Image 1 (spheres, one colour):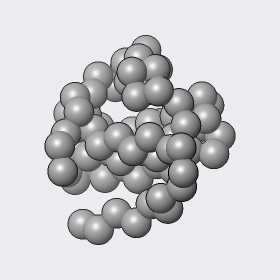
Image 2 (tube, rainbow, N blue to C red):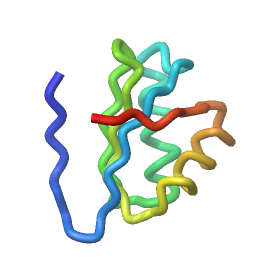
Image 3 (tube, rainbow, N blue to C red):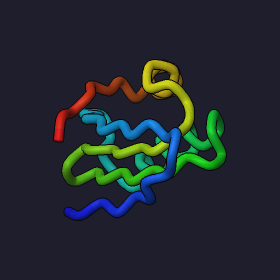
Length: 79
């Protein structure tokens, strides 16, 4: 899978593994949760690999806390 997120200055890039993401509905909920905190965020969520890549100006820990509050507990993946 190739993820093509725009690299913008001052954006954090976060790659997560979310084991509870099982379908497109989950992926949409994850994107909605992130975009509620940062409307300009870019989110690529793949239920098949359970991988989410986020480009956002919001701190990584804040995004992970928002996702956990929505029921999506995540762990950081390395490239």
